[in-house]
Image 1: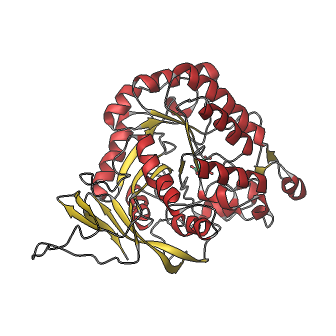
Image 2 (image 1 turned 30 degrees about the vertical axis):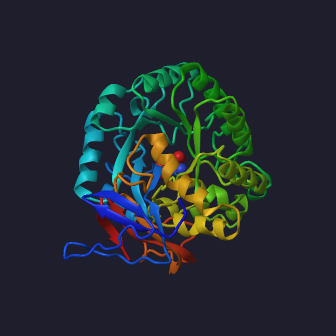
Image 3 (image 1 turned 135 degrees about the vertical axis):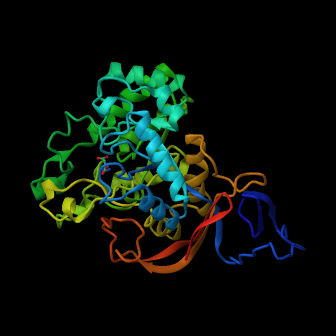
Length: 411
Ligand code: NCD
């Protein structure tokens, strides 16, 4: 829906929604939030973030990650298993869930590893992990390279109704790669990651997804070839899905020219024709949703020579203003933006929220599309500030985030 309306929330759920739905309500127990002129949206749901607990809490822990999520308008966050130890056992999944509950903020949904140690050889105990709270499986950061193991992983994921999210990278084709393979990598003298390394895995996986009928999801699509393959698969009715990050929609490999390690990310920033394909695919639904791939790193991993720097950038708090730039440039409609950040990812993950329908859980955010703020270490709730947009003045901010009717962020 896209209209001027009242939203009435009772006992953690949306009781009524519509023009004048709150008319006549009064009483001491009622709190009125006047957000006229702002956007009330179903809370955003991120299918792809990295909180670093356990193991790398100096970069982010569950509590700081959830604070960053709330400040970004997110009411649900799926966290990847590349912690230390890797989340390949019930104990780690349960620990993450417990930390999430204790934080009393946005909902935390762990992805468990698909293979033990994310080593790509032996499947994890998916039923056990699902019972502990994992909503899907992924070896994110690493691609499941062995096709036979991948087939088995998809069969098991299907049996236990878990989403399989694949980091599509043929590691043999990207050995030593620092950035996208193209004229900029040639000029900088850095080893390149060719698009083909992404495309060959997407092609193989779509064939295996068709074979197994699993809920297969392509993480952080970055290449035009992958988009083409997804479009073909979807045109045949395959129930596969994909996400794109804000940075892949906005930045090209040119951003690496000054060797800025904040722009080092996996998959790498590519070329204008990739961006054009990604934007078109997001508009037409070939790419279902936007995920941040929030990947916090400390100065230890970023203020060093390019080859030694860890890949990744934070994304939860910059997402709204960056994506609103696409809306302001007429490249994305507000409705499609909200669908891609909320409704679609919630459905794909079979998660709470993603709707403002009467009767549904009151997970929502209020966005002020005009609020100006500066992305800075001081303004970020995340423990890390590794983003190429640091110290930039931006426009648009979540000013209130609510989970099950409780305000978890207000500014
Ligand atoms: C991810 C991280 O930091 O965990 N980094 C990234 O650039 N996306 C892992 C990964 O996908 O390499």
